[in-house]
Image (tube, rainbow, N blue to C red):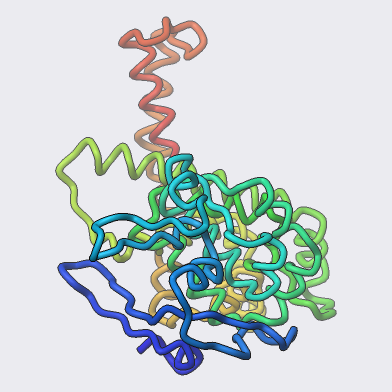
Length: 333
């Protein structure tokens, strides 16, 4: 079963040969209550009706066991699959207003598959009504679960998901930085969060992108192995790093640290306590590693390069000197 809220859908989930497989009947859905994303009317439907009630065209493809053919009742699913594009069968705005979590699902698929989102879907996601619905109609648990999947084991490009959240102006709804209340002690920090939120999100995205690049270099060109089920903790930590660095020092009162934007971000996603501790542990270990690299490895290498009169801009591209200095640049990441 997929939980109490999904009980009305009569779904079942199984793992077959390592793949998650969902079983559900063909159905239609009607939405009458504008304050709820749960359908008010559900019934048995044909494949055509089932296709048109789905959130994305690439999820509205059917394999007919009798004819051994793929059926594309929206006439756009195969095209969007070939174009590597995420779009909706019905009008995008209507689709998102019926269930605002669909935009998070669309972004998740884009991140998992390295697909683009259709311009119409991006425009609809920027509509103030969608923003309001995502903020007030969707529980924080549902938002956190969607982001977990976006950064999970199947994500080919986690930074793509963050980019799309920024492009749709939903980044601050998903990752709220402000605490929403007046507090004299935190007035300066709150002012920075308001004035520089765009820069903070961009810095987090830059850090995540660099981390992805470095991890790819390490694990695709070596025999190192790691538990990919824990990989999302590294992606979270990389994106949250700029916010973590704004947290009051360890000498500050514990209550002030717990009320900081970093802890509010973790709490807003409603993830298990062990997950939050893993993310924080990664960030706590960053500074000692950076200091080690800067003071020893990188510092000594730069001194050696300077003493030899080698500068990056003076090195011939793709020469041995250029490649050596390029490796020094990577050590900063």
